[in-house]
Amino acid sequence: MIFTVAIDGPAAAGKGSIARAVAERFGFAHLDTGLLYRAVGVKGGDPAVAAQGLVPADIERRDLRTLEAGQAASRVAVIPQVREALLAFQRRFARAEGGAVLDGRDIGTVICPEAEVKLFVTANAEVRAHRRWLEVGGDEAEVLAQQIKRDRCDAERAVAPLVLAADAVVIDTSAMDIAAAVAEAVAVVAAKLGKQV
Image 1: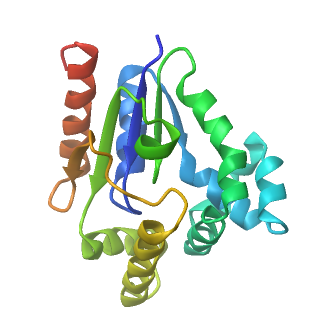
Image 2 (image 1 turned 135 degrees about the vertical axis):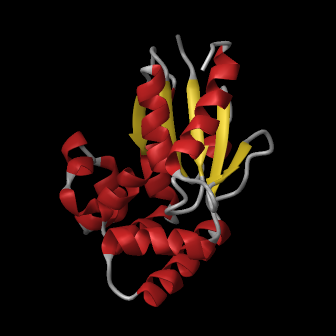
């Protein structure tokens, strides 16, 4: 069975946690596409060359969840040659036999516009910044400022900006715990598959 769940949304909205849970619940493969861009960003050198030479070990680095890696990802994600180099990999992953869940910024709009399910996971900037601060520490006001800057960069970039797909189901996690958000996502996927939750 080929079945793609595309999950988009801004940083720290909960899309990664939801994606992992949905993949586990339905036995689908999971790809956090943001890790691809983070890996390219932290590799250094020419970003296009780094993207073309990306290997699985690159996305298993322990330093990919840092604020610095996130900022590096935003910088390289605007480079068309980087996006092109990673596009085919993501599409092959998405349409492989057995089902797949991909989370990122442009999955439902650019990578997999044909996805059977599209979710847009969001939350207000203050809630997302607080969640990220709990992960990385530091000055919470600075984390919020960086969050707002990153949101603007992701939404305004010329290539594959973060936008809501017309046929996406929105899940706003601002006032939700992760269990409720996962339950909502699972219900959407199950309905499309025609299964009981």
